[in-house]
Image (cartoon, rainbow, N blue to C red; front, side, top):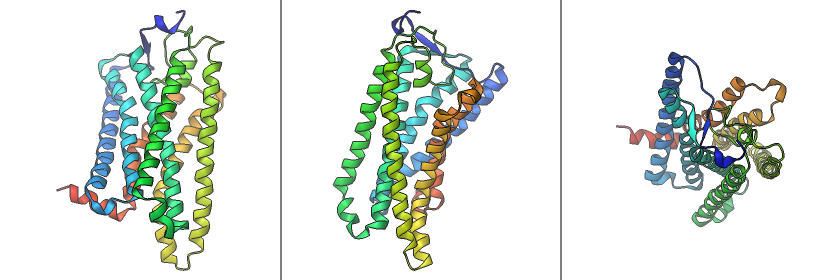
Length: 304
């Protein structure tokens, strides 16, 4: 195959060779997908319908749930269909769409988590200015900026990746299309262009991570200065869900992309990609609702 235009489809990595294990993977993914749909759907509906949750923190949480739904819907349904119908194929256009929507949702989510860290910083460190700095207009602008940045970032990555000539076949060693694995199929002298874009992406992600860390250092310092233990506990409780989600996303993604090549294998890569692409969208709703009484009360009202 001399270039990308001659490729009409890619072959994804199969979960198992036996029919019984393929069906087991289908039912496992179906259960996780339905749990993610239910959890994120309940949060979106609760925040939209309960006026008590019309605050910046829950507005950003609604956006996070929308992104989680988009992220898991990009990868899991196709993997389920392939397991059910015993196939590995995904069209060239379908692969490009998967790359675009996954990068869009993942990058936008990380930008949004950075904005949510800023929200917690203002709420705890500058509570008197909270209404001014995080007005409805300001929140809408920040949310629009995260979604717009994620969109532009995804367009840039997808266009750059799929404009490369592919000389190494069409087998993608993953259960969904992913940029690093598409680059492995590129001609040896062509992938450097996308590698430069990836360096910029790493710098942006590192900048967001540093901002989150600095924000939480300031938050913890402010919380420890609160005289009452009850006040400290209340302040910490508003930060723990966000901190848990950030830790889950960063740890799984870091292990996936920073692990040593010597320990890499198709099976391990598939497990790791499952951890960072499927687990966070399914767990985030439960992490946020577990310790949040207002959110739990709003969700209970939705369930007859």
